Length: 629
Image (tube, rainbow, N blue to C red; front, side):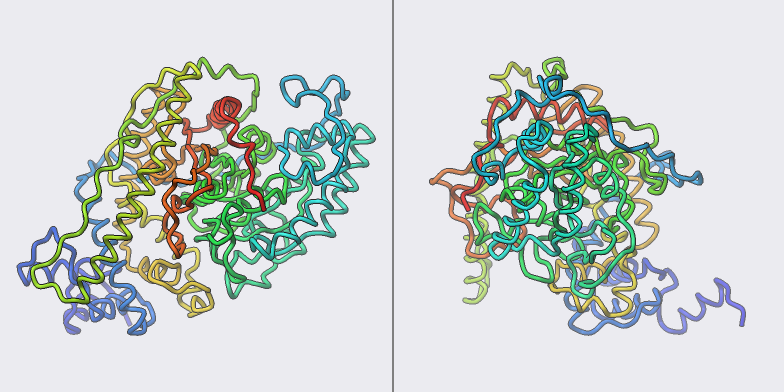
């Protein structure tokens, strides 16, 4: 049987389906329905279950249940709006998509190995400080920085075995409260710790991470242990290799003590074993998806951790838990052995107690590994703690520091029922409380600018280019749906814990209807974003920004690095948190919980970014405040 375009279109016509239909069928059907009924094209289309059935047939997707179709409609309407927003850009032919095909093999890996051990009295100064005394109780250093722990280990004031046992004990003690551990790697850790002590004693020092216990977000493969991705249906999955980042931290002498939680398939803080909690307020979630790493670091249960970010997964939990998180430039750290969610947006990075800790950890994990082709072979990274940050040009996103507009409640409809009135009033109250929290937190953002001025910084006002960044985010959904294609087509998505309209199962289904042409158009729009955001760093070296704002979406799309640092604690006068933590907002913490500020830099200027963050922390000391568990 032959098959050509003409016979296919004829067959579609006989079925009563318009010839324009392909995977973009749903958009076309909705547009045709609007045109036929004279509906305003600027308004959201009326997508029906029948349209979903017709589109699914042509896309070769198994039929969805009535309940699934009902859940999908809102997402499909939003997706339709995103496509319209991209089309309004009227992209010229000269704009290429924001992805590049590389026919060449990956770049050569960077050799890793032990470094000679310097004499204790010659190592320190501006890097590690003076030689410390042995703590009276090993748990006294639970919240110590990587820098401080490294100094103690190097000078043999404590041992890695002591430190490892202490953190293992704390992980076991606080996990019932915070739910941040999926698997303890105790046997592996104790062997590594003993080896670290022997090497340090013999003068074979591997660097500032040698002997320091750390935790891995459980999307990093570790040979001999489950790698669950936090998701139901994957609880017993084993991947017979170590992720590149794990190998590099092994080479640096760090000690892996635990595989920590993440929201299922890297969304939120809910995983197959429950919800990871915020150490500052265990009634709330830790946010996600790097939920366990952020919670464990903040609770003093690991020396540092490795998380990942696609669209806020380091930023969000670092903010909620009061950590320092460094989302590296895209293409700086190899993701080999890590779960893929979005090949063009996934980044692995450190979550630590200080900006300098982040810099030290990044130094151990950056660079080509010969396998991840996304790693940029010409990128460099060199941590210089003595960098003169005063010579840096510092900008700030002026519009994002504007005070929130006055709250305006939704108005009563002309023929509102009692039930509709009740729902409107509930929405208004929810929105009012959200506005109060935003207005309260705004003063911390402004205080950060004031502090920088006190430090002698001359702030330069810049603005984020006006582009529809939100309309580009369906790229993530399309790539994630492809990464977990079998999960959707087999029906195994029902094993995932969360099944709401904004959870992965429904998002994957919705993304099946994102047309290939629109995916490419959105990537072309993303090229404009990369060009225009990058141009800001011709004017300044560092940009200061509120953590929650449009920059979070924009810079994840453009691949620029971000450093998120604590920026104080909310006072007793802070608005109370909502009764339920939906995971939608980071500013719900309430009295006594942390806030953050974000610093941005140009591509592969991560070391410069960390140096400026170090200076801010030395001036403020917010990173030294820890939750009382």
